Image 1 (cartoon, one colour):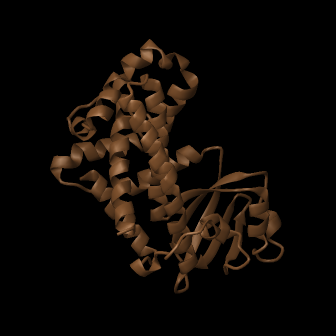
Image 2 (spheres, one colour):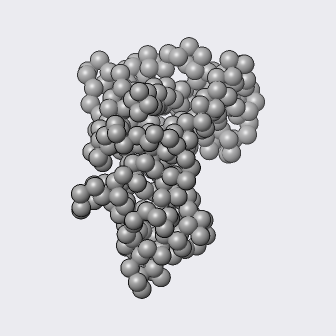
Image 3 (cartoon, helix red, strand yellow):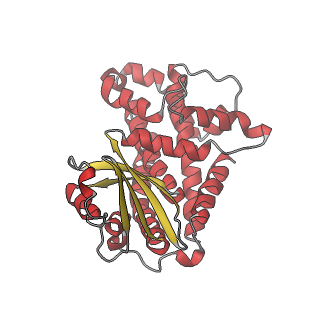
Length: 294
């Protein structure tokens, strides 16, 4: 139910950017990726430098949609392989910490692809990419922008001022691409309204992916703890704390778990919540992929 609502929200935003089924590419090439389109001398773009870390770019709607669908198509390989490895780990009774980290990256990859279709995503640009992009800026303004090496950028797409045009707000994220990714997906989930029957589970998902919620940890915070700051979790303590997480992953019962009233964010439940995020995102991702490729 919640996965279905996420997919509706995402596909609705894609439609609001002008997408029609005829926009689906007949074939795919990495030459048509978003990054390639952004710095291409062929694509007609206009660049305005807003400040040292922010650009506003306009490009033809057809080029934007082609680029986004191309990136989604090629991103599918990474998502599917990550899920394959995760399934093997869960079924192979691997220690919980390995499964937690693999689950996180499966969620992160799906989070990025889902948000991409909705017009909110992250792109990485080299110094050369940034220089080429700024070559389309108004004369005398490119020096306002600070190029300080390869950088991650948050991109937000909206309808342009002119017909068949997309406006892109491109902002340097610094070293926070994972936090930006969860902020993006949170903004897609927050507007969702469901029936009373599903409200408890829906609100829990909103809380888990919200950076402003101080009770539940962001999925990226769980990843940081299990992969970096607490190596002891790869031992007996992690096996104990991750027991409920692994049970939910194996049984596919996380939605039922999330529907219980009064779930508290204690240590075991904070990591178990990652299984719930995974189930919600994988369901939404499959629905979006099916709709775009039907």
